[in-house]
Image 1 (cartoon, rainbow, N blue to C red):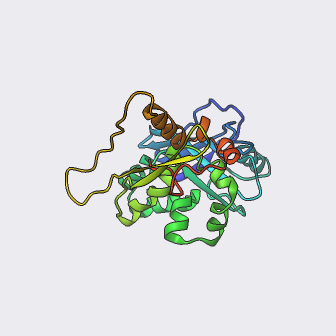
Image 2 (cartoon, one colour):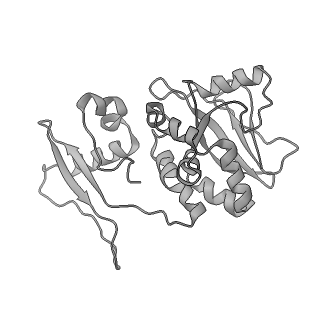
Image 3 (spheres, rainbow, N blue to C red):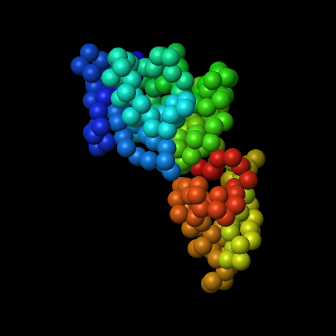
Length: 249
């Protein structure tokens, strides 16, 4: 399956299918900015000539802060728009984990793997291929700041590759550290894994004013990376909200 980038600067434009391709991943420009870093591309997966899945592909290029502009530049310099991008080190993360299951079902396992190689999928290259160039980019601060900013992308990165090893995706136990009004942290354990049914259900119980709503609000903001959970706020407060590297979505 071909992967193609349409040159342009209209961020609301939905990338179209090439007339010669029934199955393809079409990409286009997006001007979204993640704290001074732009990696977002509009993405549409076309299957049998039809728009099957729309999402965003977060593409981080080595030594570059704005991938969409860089891709336009490469097109101007002679690149034909087809992936893989020649002579360029990059990794990508889709915003929707359904992307992985879709390409396996519609294309087959071998062709699906080739798509991940072409877009240099970060989860696949680091966890299955153990690609040294991909490992280098994934370890860069910009990777956390932009490609992994949103919850859907974090889920895709952490679990999408597991489908190719027939591993199950699950929500693991985690500890939430809520920031109290005096600046201290209060640990709250959430348990989802259980050896037998019924699975654990987590309930917050307490009198009015104790902080139940505040805790849930904090959990969502940390989870989505907004407001009190934004990278800037967390760094200013020197606060780590979870005991795991990725949000537990």
